[in-house]
Length: 275
Ligand SMILES: [Zn+2]
Image (cartoon, rainbow, N blue to C red; front, side):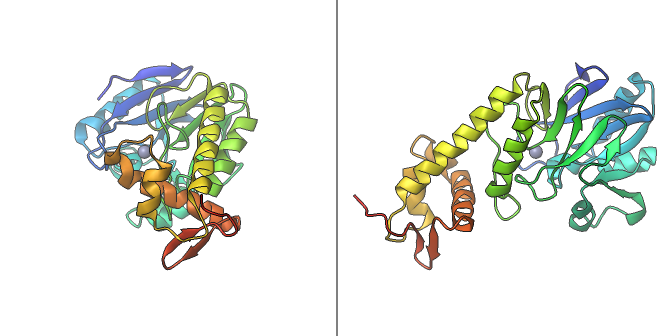
C-alpha cells in the first residue's frame, strides 16, 4: 500500500492491492475534500490496515467522511465500502443499479447518484461501457474527472460482455473527449495529465481493432477461437483468453450495428468475399 499522495488540490490518492481483486493490480482509492467533508471513492479492500489508512488520510484533510462513492460494482472497487460505512456512518453512494447488484448494501445505507446530481462542485456522470452501472465524478471548474475504470493510467480497459458494452464504451470515451478534461484520475495507474491525447489514442486503438475484426470476417462463419489469432496477432498467446472477451465485445457492437451476423457455427460478414 502506498502513502496517501496528493494528486490535485484537495485530492489524495491511496494505492491499495485489494484482496478481492481478480488480478494482481492495485486500485486507486481517492479522497476528495468538498464543501461538506470528504468523499472516499472506491475503497478497494476490507483489510483493517487499509481501512485505518483511509481514515487517517481523511483526517489529514481535516474533515469527516460524508459519502463512500462507488464508481462501479467490480470487487476491487468496493471491498472496503461496508467496513468504512460501519466505521463512519457515511452512506454508500453510486448508480441506482449498484444496490441491486450488491445485496450486501443495506437499503438505509445507500444513496443513489444519477446523471447530473451534484456534490458541491462535483457532478455525477453516467459513463457505461466497462460496466453498465459505471459513474464518474466531474469537476467543471478544474476540468478534472475521477473516472474509475473508464480509462486506466496505463494500457487499455477490458470490455467484458455482458456487463461490458463496447458500443456504450465508445460513446463514453467520445463524451469525455468532448469535455476537454485537463486531468483524469483513473481506478488504476498514474494520473492522466494529457487526457485529450490519451482519449484520442484509446479511441483510435479501438477503431483500428474494429477494422481488424471486419477484415478477419468472411461470409463463412468462424468461431471466436479461430478469429482471435487473426485479430490479435500482435498480442502474446497467453493473453488470448482475455482477447477473446474483447473480441466478443467488438462482435456484439458490430452485430448491434447490423454489420455482422452470428450463426451456430460462428460469426460472419455477409457479402464480403474471402481472399
Ligand atoms: Zn478496477
